[in-house]
Length: 323
Ligand SMILES: Nc1ncnc2c1ncn2[C@@H]1O[C@H](COP(=O)(O)OP(=O)(O)OP(=O)(O)O)[C@@H](O)[C@H]1O
Image (cartoon, rainbow, N blue to C red; front, side, top):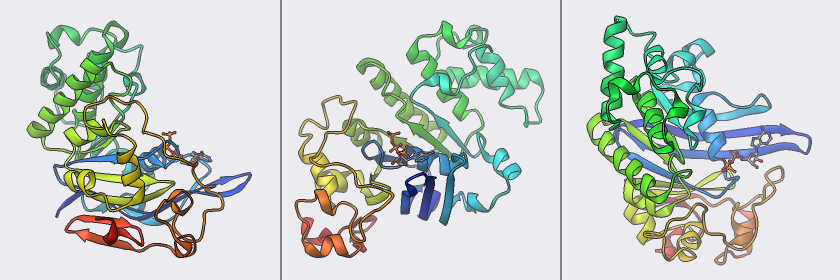
């Protein structure tokens, strides 16, 4: 399987007053070429750290003790800052929950969409044409006249479309969509999901889609990665994950969210207990404390990564028995 993004054994620590906080521990995550992969996990599981690591925009107190972030065949961690700057926006781009994060409030949409192409050997007229074309592709009505609008002149849903257009302008290999529909109402959310589905078919870039909304993940994604407390605990095809979860954490999320496919949820359902202290993680399974299946060995020994089906794995001592 050719990968747009292949994260291998990635760890990220933060230096804090309380000591070294292990925000990501030995994370594996694969986004195959042209596929949409969903990333789920409760707040604090390390999603933002993972995105920042891929963009090489980690906080100053972060350290990467090991791992690889292979984007289209190149380990991003081996690049110089200047090389990485060239790739950001071109090979990998991001759409955030709040579209204003990626838009400049004091510049017109057209100016921003033309400026982002500054490295292309194209005339200004050609850049403008490409920008209008991209606005049309994200179904902005009357795109040529929208070029003169400022972001605040658009509705929230239209702004998110513009942010998606900006992110796709340079034909990235990978689009990271960080809860892009969470701030929108239900109707707009459906529209943006449908748009992403259509664009993905047309443009074919891979998407890493981060969401708390399991129903949206089920609808949009081909594969799912489940994260818990800095670890990727399960990865597999969307049907496998939803119908035959192999990790007790995934199963707990699904069990306490029976309306998961239809119901709209801003937050993941809560399961009893709280996240472990990441400055002093347990020697064994990171989920053992909250796990209904755990026995004495779980807290003491790290679970191996167990393949339960082709392309489906979980890090649990009981992964086989779960199915
Ligand atoms: N700059 C930092 N310094 C110290 N600790 C940090 C820093 N950034 C994040 N953390 C810690 O790292 C862990 C992972 O945080 P991260 O923000 O990546 O999680 P998240 O899943 O994105 O959560 P949320 O959805 O709430 O943003 C948390 O325990 C958090 O407190």
